[in-house]
Image 1 (tube, one colour):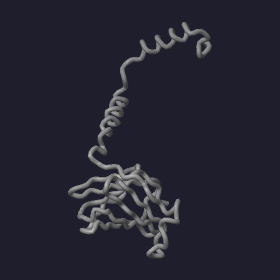
Image 2 (cartoon, one colour):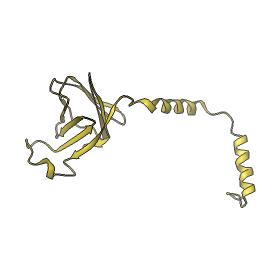
Image 3 (cartoon, one colour):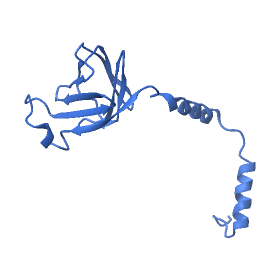
Image 4 (cartoon, helix red, strand yellow):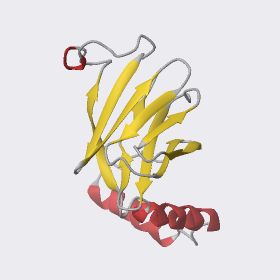
Amino acid sequence: MEQWPPAGDDALLAELGAALLDSGPVPEEFLDTALAAFSWRTVDAGWTVAELTFDSACDLAPAGPLRSGGTDRTLTFHGGPVAMEIEVTRTGIVGQLSTGCDGRVSARTPDGRYEDVPMDAMGYFSMGPLPPGPVQFRARTAEYAMVTTWVLLR
């Protein structure tokens, strides 16, 4: 067995050249995976990314006294002129989009969609029990499409 990496530059270049010449065809599953990954480049095109601007788990002072004793955590996301505020409780999630119009909100996990619910005319929505792991929210109205950054709710 020869020494690896080769001791000299010339030997290393010869070894790398031989590896490139003898690479063979790219396996079909590699091509399929590459094409699938490439198709995700525009998955959020047309969506405004909303950044987390407040999290009561990190900064309790600006929240002031809570309106109800059932709220475990409050988060606020801002994307352009629109804000989404959610309250996380033991039983689920309630929230409001500041645009205050009909639309839909969905939450997804890395494994896929967690829940998809309607917003009422004031922008309110509610979802069931919390999913494990990170979550991303998407809100769409006739005038606006917003996607939040990923966040852990537990």
